Image (cartoon, rainbow, N blue to C red; front, side, top):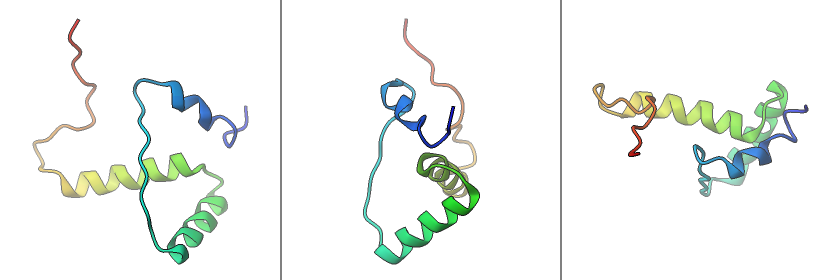
Length: 72
């Protein structure tokens, strides 16, 4: 299945959420060009970027990437 058409499948997943924000138009254009050059979706690029930002900015003892414990 084509990666560019599969992103809508994440909308219904409980382990994903949507985020949004505003950035300068020139930065948005550069972002689109860069991700097109890598042939990745916007969601893939944002996930990669945000993971790196979180790693750099959270306290070292905060385990953000472990699966959440669920009450059952």
